[in-house]
Image 1 (cartoon, rainbow, N blue to C red):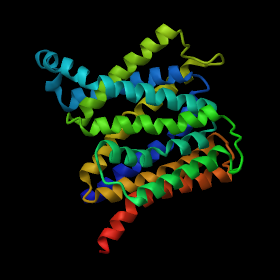
Image 2 (cartoon, rainbow, N blue to C red; image 1 turned 45 degrees about the vertical axis):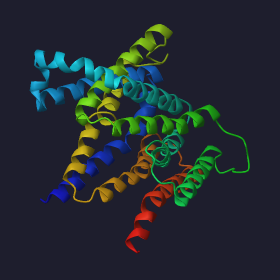
Image 3 (cartoon, one colour; image 1 turned 30 degrees about the vertical axis):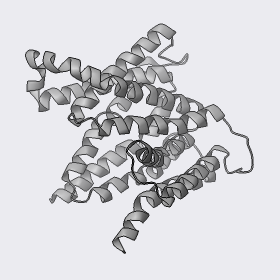
Length: 306
């Protein structure tokens, strides 16, 4: 099997796993509060990535070597771990606890266009008219979803939930820009980020006396939900996606496959959660994804045709 075909397999596995995550969030939030879900998921991600790190590079965990690097790594990861997983996922899980899964996942998908705009601002990339047009289309899609198609209305089912779901894109963009400048191995920086994220959420729960479980919780189901999210949203799926990018000879093609995820996610939401997919969700999601493809794809097409 060629490396490109292997890349498609790894990318397909990643997309399939990520497509289940919105459903997993909603199921887990039946038993866990947003704080509890982040607590168990970030702990699982840290332990999982730590095991992978130890198996793939055991020399990192020799006592002498560990003491040399741990302080520097913690310092570098402090702001990154604060942004993601702590702030990002706490906001995202709160949004999911307030909104229907289809709305939260669609609104969260504005991250790609926001990231592109932050790259213009912070990385001094050139601003193009297509960037502005893409932004307008994306946020029109947000408006359609948030108002359930009543675009002339100012009535939102849950304005705070919609605000949190869209605002996560800003947190993610800041985190991603910091990550670009971080030259450590991807597995190392993720491991430290999730360790610090777990510490932040543990301290937050302790000092605010926030409960980890909902009043009607079945504890075992809640913990299993947190473990699933920690592995398939935060840990294993990243490794699969990273492997796909390593193997491919066409990064752009593999990267664009990610836009299948929200549509597959709607299938899981409909079949497992039994949510009736509102026409406004589908139209708004199409607009958001189209805006991202427009922003990424049209300039490249025009350049090839010059």
